[in-house]
Image 1 (cartoon, rainbow, N blue to C red):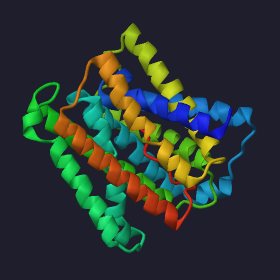
Image 2 (cartoon, helix red, strand yellow; image 1 turned 90 degrees about the vertical axis):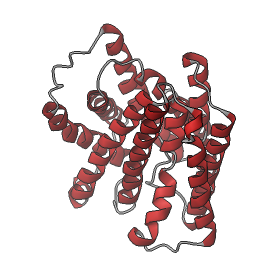
Image 3 (cartoon, one colour; image 1 turned 90 degrees about the horizontal axis):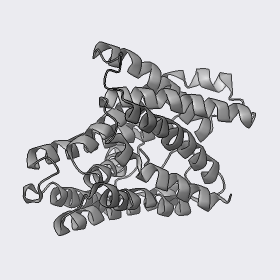
Amino acid sequence: MKGKMRLIMAMLIFGSIGVFVKKIELSSSEIAFIRGVIGSVFLLLASFLVKHKPSFKALKENAILLLLSGAAVGFNWIFLFESYRYTTISNATISYYFAPIFVMMLAPWVLKEKLTSVKVVCIFTAMIGLFLIVNPGTGGTNGSQDHVLGIFYGLLAAAFYAGLVLMNKFIKNLSGFEITLVQLMTASLVLFPYVWWQGNLDFAGLTSTSIIFILILGIVHTGLGYFLYFSSIQKLKGQTIAVLSYIDPISAVIIAAIFLSESMTLIQMIGGALVLGATFFSEKLEIKVSEKGKTPTISP
């Protein structure tokens, strides 16, 4: 299978995550924990099959960053899944795509990168787009209050993802596949005491339907999706990856409309276009500085 087709399949898989999460009758922390466990097992098996052996010396050198970034993955999932519960998948996905804007805002302090006038325009454009999406007159699936809360959770997920992107830039001598595998395992370990603290380890809401959907989420949306993604980006240019990554939010909107009858107002569509446009140009600027390596595109 060619690199482009693999990446397209990965983005379509990521775009359908919200529909499955909405059908699972568990808390967001429970879903994130089980997803991390299943995804880790899948990728471990995949690494054995392709006879891929990570460098234990590199793992030790990056231990602290891998631990922190793994925790960021776990809480990123929790807040994204909470966002799905309170607002439409379309709005949750678009607010989640605010992550590159957060990276751009933090880069001058964390990465010592210059904040150019073009980057400032991208930031303000995204903020205007977000304002249009949160417009009180648009309402939400459960009322305007839940709608705004859902977008807030989406932004929190984006903030954790931005932290993940920035930390990944400091991880050395490990491939994207190796980093993701360790981060998934770390996310599971970090989320275990959190789920236990919430008293949800009995998974009381786990029905037969939820079991099927959580298995799909762990195997297809995490294990297979990430495997397709990392096996594809090794063969593609950064510009191609950036463009094809936008299949994810577009497919999320279409899938939600088909299977959940969700819709966006014209004002929200304009806001979404502004946010995605701003993130697209921000990623384009990133690629001009250096080709994308370990830093992943935005994916749930």
